[in-house]
Length: 264
Image 1 (cartoon, rainbow, N blue to C red):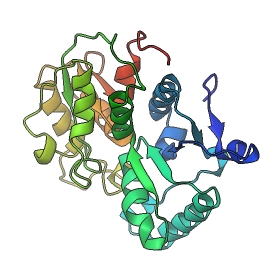
Image 2 (image 1 turned 90 degrees about the vertical axis):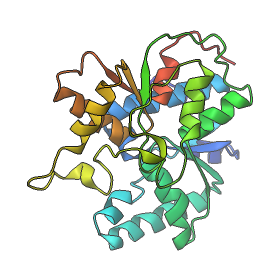
Image 3 (image 1 turned 30 degrees about the horizontal axis):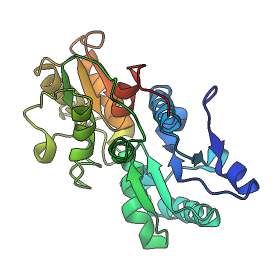
């Protein structure tokens, strides 16, 4: 994250300090070029809001979600136990992540192995910052038609539908919902480790079906909250040659599109 103000947990520990939150960047946010843009957007918002945060940097490893979804329980537990030991060593209390897959794993599955942390999705944390007046969005102005895609791991699995919509509503962006949305939402096709394999013979391309539903709303932006969803939806748009006409953006990216968000 060159040119961004980011400190590691090791740096905080060396100073004898603890950050307000640990930002768990995740594998996609660390290594995927598209998802790195989400990481940078979220860091910019944290800095604007004056949040004291740290990342693990080179000490962060995979949370283990893909291994468990693919059926490799041994690798999942190995990764989880290593991560729990590291997080406990730093006395981590609150973790924020922009990946719903990591969010679900850290929040709901690490406790099975002794890892008990408060885990918050980045849209939930952004909503908190806006509500507390720490992130000033009063000068935000963007007039464009937006539809919103609920990721399965934040929505159907963890029941969070309001935070992303509340953020968009707070900056007066009206949402044109797809026919299948919120509790009746439709998967992007990447869940359950499907991100890392091709469809079985005869299967429809789920991401193309979902992209078509978004296209049918007439929206120019598909708002999302998950790096996997964003990749799948961007690929789905290409099937209809709409990738130049419609953009898929994370909630954090939408907020920083407007440069009038004032620094605190």
